Image 1 (cartoon, rainbow, N blue to C red):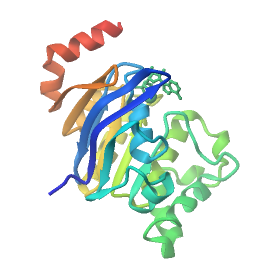
Image 2 (tube, rainbow, N blue to C red):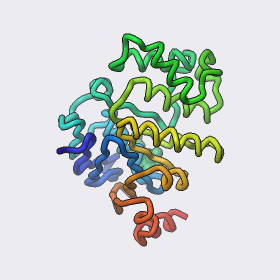
Image 3 (spheres, rainbow, N blue to C red):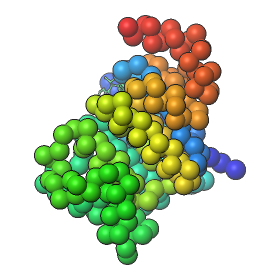
Length: 237
Ligand code: ADP
Ligand code: MG
């Protein structure tokens, strides 16, 4: 059985400099897969390749057994892939609810989009800001709305790029249990995050990227104890 999401040997160069070099990664339904690494390691670039915003120079992206390497982002979204952006990419002039409705109407539950959206707003505790314009939100809440919008499409795979940036301890704990429950519903969650407590508490498997290469894959405990990983992070400091 292939994994739900399969990244094989992905290489991307920017003007002769390799941002990704032969990257392999998989994500499975019902699991939270972490992707960590120092700034500039290539995490967001890998998300661009997976979601179809950037064509790799080499390599392959598979989704549910289908080769999607040559498909654009909209086609991949219709096949069940959703993502959030490190730099918020909400529709600023739309309300929070309408941001979610746009996504829900593209998803499989499009006929009852508005009840799907109301459920997600409640689940993420966003009902109070449902009618607020997205570009007037504080960035911490904006991040949560990005996650809500990705969930509204009812994805099989969800890619989250630093979703907990700017959250306080209590918000991060709530977010951690939300990610666990999303995975429990059978979604493959791929999480890029700097908050190590969140990564260590919620991830089943962690991939470590450094200078465009995967240097370690394992359980949170194994990764945390790996001397190669420690050296990569100390090198950054
Ligand atoms: P991360 O998300 O892990 O911090 P990125 O994927 O954003 O890393 O960046 C990886 C490397 O690729 C960095 O050296 C970055 O400067 C470079 N890079 C990213 N996007 C571009 C781009 N559009 N043009 C040129 N270089 C880029
Ligand atoms: Mg990034």
